[in-house]
Length: 150
Image (cartoon, rainbow, N blue to C red; front, side):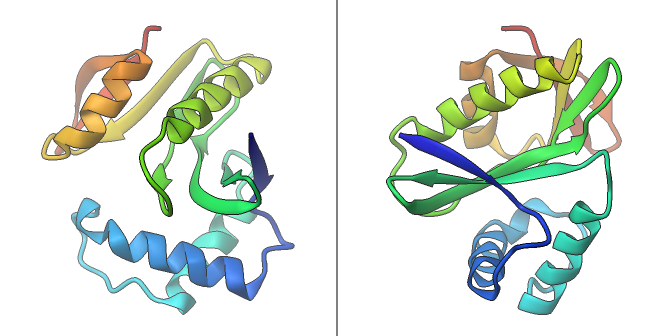
C-alpha cells in the first residue's frame, strides 16, 4: 500500500539526506550545472515549502521511502507536475500509482489541464509518462511539454 507524506516544514535531516541522494542520482536531468548537496537540497525544500503553488510528497510503500513527486504549479485551470524521482526499490508500478494519485489530486484542486516538462533525451521517463496518458503538446525552450490526455 502506498502512502504520501507532504514535504513540509516538519521534514527531518534524514529525509533531507534521502532527497539529496535521490536528486544526485538524477542530476543529469538539469541542464544547469550545479552540485547537488545537502545544503542545496535544504534550500530547494524551503523554496517548495514557502511557495503556495508548489506541493511535493514523499512516496512511501510499506513504511519505506521509495520516491518523491509533486506539483511545481497548482491552482487555476492548469497545473504542472514537477520532478518525479523513483528513489529506492524496484520498478513495480508504485510510481505509476503515485502519478495517478497526483492526477486525481489535481482534479480536486479544480485543474482542467495537467502538464509536465521533460527533456527529449529522457526516453525512459517519456515512456513512463506516455504509459500514464501524457502526450507531447509543444516545445518550451529546450524541453518538450507533455499534456495529460488520459
